Every structure is written in structure tokens, then in C-alpha cells.
Image (spheres, rainbow, N blue to C red):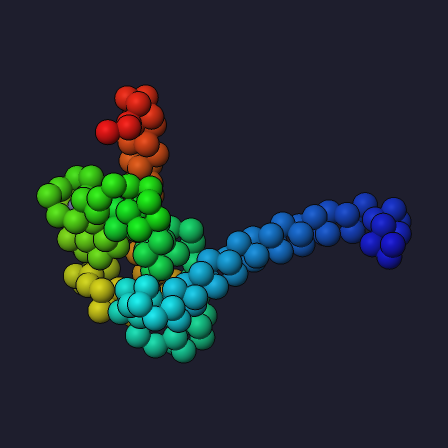
Length: 176
Ligand SMILES: [Zn+2]
């Protein structure tokens, strides 16, 4: 009631409230991503990957920069377009990588798949360091510039590939 009175009285307020609600929505999405990582970290067996990347939660939570994007959440939680996970949730028959002969996991995609080697090298040249599961998060935490370089690493293209392949499978009447 108070809000509608304010809206009626001053259109400027309406705009301010809209901006505010957008911001709240954005914050909610970011919070959901952040919570997903915390949950992945805490769940004992499945959290092994997240804990390898984030050995300590404190510096991660207390950081002053870094938006946890959808793709970064996938990389850090391991829940995303990785054959290992897709197999686990029964969306794929095996754990094989789409691009090479190895099995696909977040570690494989982020650090060793030949499909992403060129992209990885560009990111590393930009950062001046070779990325490993051990230093991935500490490099993210270094600065917001580094965070942004790493956040753009790999997963965008892979998700597009996944959608395209799912479409093709449907068109070919997957079944087998
Ligand atoms: Zn691969």
C-alpha cells in the first residue's frame, strides 16, 4: 500500500523501484549460483571436485570481486555440460568426451581436452600462468581482471555445442 502510494505520487519513484527490483533479481540469481557452489562444496563425495578447486571457503566467501556466473557455477560445481555429470543424471549413455577419446569431466574440459587447448592457451597467455585445478581459484581471486578472463574460459562454446548436438540427436531419432 505504501509502495503504490509512492508510485502514484512520484513517477521517479516508479523508475527507482524498477531498477531496484531488477537489481534484486540479479542478486537472487547470483546468490543462487553462490549457494549451489557452497552446497557442492559441502556434499561429501560429489563435492570432491569443488573442494579440490576451493580448498578453503573463507577467502572465497570474503572476496571483494567476482560475479559467480552461470558458467562459472558449472565449472566449480561440476554440475553442467560434462559427460560425467550428464551420465550421472541419465542424460547421456556414457562418460565419453564429445571431442576426443578420453572421458569427460569438469577437469577434462577445463584443463586437458584437446578441443579447448587453443582457448586455454590464450587464457593462460593473458594471465601469464598455466592453469591447473590447484591454482584455478587462487587466480580467480587475484583481481577482478583475472576473474573476468578466467570466467570467459571455455564453457560458453561448449554449451552451444551441447545444444546443437542434442538437436541433431533428436533429428536423427536418437534411440540407439
Ligand atoms: Zn575431450
